[in-house]
Image 1: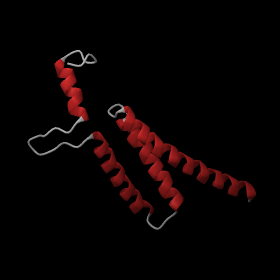
Image 2: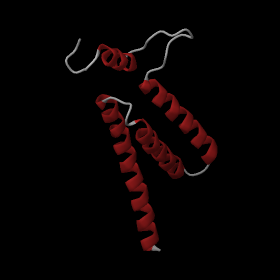
Image 3: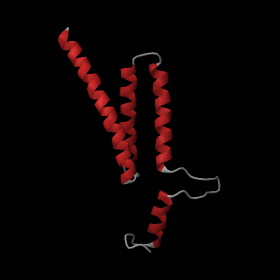
Image 4: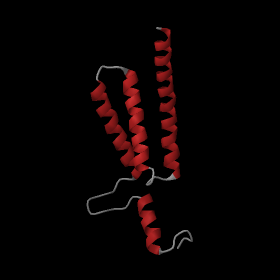
Length: 110
């Protein structure tokens, strides 16, 4: 038994969360796979909402979905997965700041 865990049950539980385990129905999905599915569905929904509209709204809504997904899954994800999600959030944050900056400049010039 690893010294980080108090009981064998705790160690088995953590290992079951980190690795795929077979169930009666088949295989469980990892948390990273669930997050990917959530984000893919969110992007499709946002695509239908914005339609042929503005790409800026599309990117901002994706950014909002990333923030919501991170906040909802932060407790259950590993440090590595949080860092990967933060990378995407920072990328979309730069896009968001660029879009808002362009809008402010456009308003100030008119």
